[in-house]
Amino acid sequence: MIYVSRQEHFNAAHKLYNPSWTEERNKEVFGPCANTNWHGHNYDLIVTVKGQPDPETGFVIDLKQLSTLIREHVVDQVDHKNLNLDVPFMAGQLASTENLVVAFWEILNREVSKISTAKLHCIKLYETPRNFVEYYGE
Image 1 (cartoon, rainbow, N blue to C red):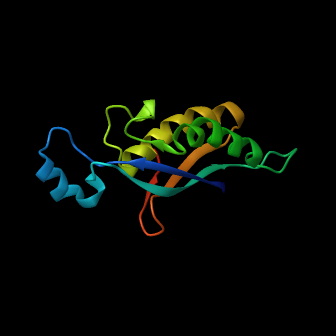
Image 2: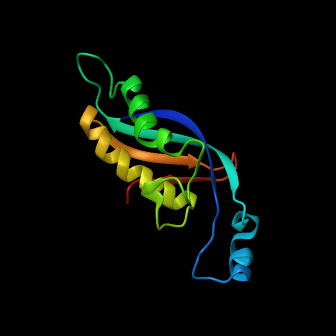
C-alpha cells in the first residue's frame, strides 16, 4: 500500500463556546478560546490517500486533481471565514478542530472517490504548530 499526502493552508476565525453553558463555565473550560470577539488560526491541512499506483501513470492519485478538490470543497469554504458563522457545514456544531476535521473527512471521502480509486486514509489538521488532530474516519 502506498500513501500519498497533499498539504494545504487556510486562515479562519472561531470561538469555542457552548451556548447551553454560562459565560463563566465557557471561560473556565475554553479559556481565551471563548473570547466574545473570536480568535483566529493559521491552519495547515494534510490529506493522505492510499492505494496502488496506476500502471499507466504511476500515480496513486493525481496530486493536481487532489489539490483542486481540497481547495474547492474545503479550503475555499473556510479560508478567511468565521467557522461559527460563515460555514454551513459547521452550523450547529462547536467549532473545535476535532469537529472540523470530521466535517472535512465527510466531504473529502465523498469527493476523492469521484476522481480516483485511491481511498482517503487520514486527515491531519494543525491548528497551531504544536496542536493538531488526526482523523482516520473511524
